[in-house]
Image (cartoon, rainbow, N blue to C red; front, side, top):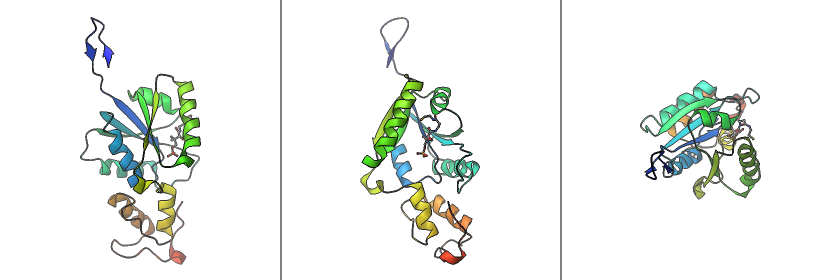
Length: 188
Ligand code: PNS
């Protein structure tokens, strides 16, 4: 809440948080954080980092398409890409906060550094941490890709569209078990 210039009437601002990440691919852990974020903020912007240094499995365009599909029925979730400094993007996006999920203590050190660096860069943007559901505390994009590549099931760990896209990448038809390790293409 802020005070209007004319008096002391509180003016409710549209609260926006940016939820940044690689989302290669989005997992149900991410979906859980967005859902929890929407209980605090009116709008959450899923901001996909365009990072030329990493070799992602899904292109930025593919990741945008997947996340848009996941949130196609939710007008309170915006999907966008960004490059450069996160705080500069957050400012451009009209966000007052950066939303990050915490799965375990092991996440904390990196997240602490990120939050303090972002605060130094832009003191007006607050980092808000939300604890993920216990059931997703071990889920990461990297492990999802690894498990899928090695023939394990990722059902219930990712939205159905992600499972479909993983199968398409691998060339495995829907309903069939994942391809044998010897014929699978390398997934990163
Ligand atoms: O999904 P990830 O890899 O955990 O997301 C990391 C991300 C995108 C939040 C982080 O790499 C980032 O904010 N990059 C943007 C560059 C930046 O602003 N760096 C300075 C802050 S330390």
